[in-house]
Image (cartoon, rainbow, N blue to C red; front, top):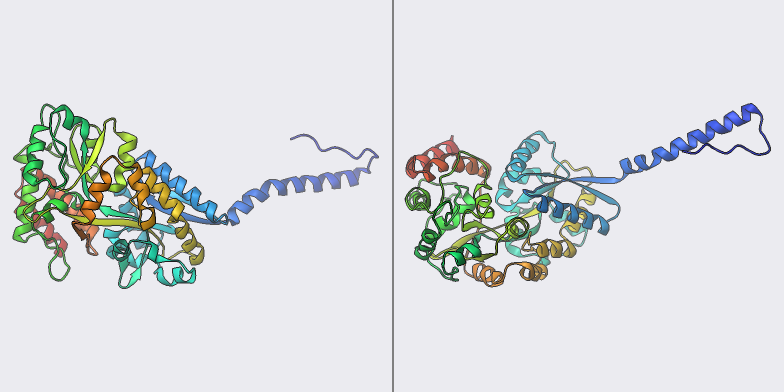
Length: 420
């Protein structure tokens, strides 16, 4: 910093010192003002999951986009990997130390609903039009008659497949109505050396499409988890046989990481894997091969898959609800939805923006997605103890996959602990 100029006409020493002191104080004030303004700015923290740099960077871009729409708010993104996110959120919800804006997967709405502000009156006060959103995901994010999160995406689970491996091994690309036998035949042809036809993991999201397509259910008439009914046990055993009997999927390590199967596929070591439209952005940023999408193969009851989605809600402890609701409106705006869709991160919850996902998805994706949505899809219904169920299924399911434990015994353990 350059020295302050002195008055050319001269000043008494005490006046000069007084002026210098005032000038120094003024400069100190000017230095401090920006940080004071920043501290007093309307800052909201936003908690969101992200498993890759591409995904996290996209969420930062969405936050910046939202801030442009409402310059009076600053949205600070706090991210965590998928598993860590739900572990941390569980702790935060119990302690009351949640962020201002919380991301919520529809499957976990019952578990975390009490930690979220009901949005209906807040959105009504803003004259916000919910008719622009798909009613399926609005219903999935509603608990006890109150909307808990404003959706940004939804969609079914289907199969991602490595087109290069299919071509190299002279395997026909999956047909729109392919059967489980055709899927298994393709997986066997694609399995050789250190390459596998399919990647499995006993996380409900990934194996439920196979369970449902074989006529099994996972909830009883009271809406409670029931994994010891005969149909579920048989269907889960059938899924595990892909590893320990047919050997078209590799044995699993002892891990709780649900990205295990996806990582195997993105590395080019498995030809097929189950995921949803939100993972197109991760596939585009990480794989070095051409890929496509396919329907879930038809089982004894047809091709049936689950539909889920996610949204942004407001913590029950947020200080300024009106500011927070404007923020989530901006995070799910038309511009935000178009950007997410264009990147392949989200099949938009806003109906008018869904075409943007089709434009940037792999060729043939629109036909697969529309065929799936117009065919055998069911809402992904869950329970308040869903997180516990996920963890137990992985813990006891991996030994089943590896042929170390019968499905019936493992599922008895899961059911017993859920009921304890």
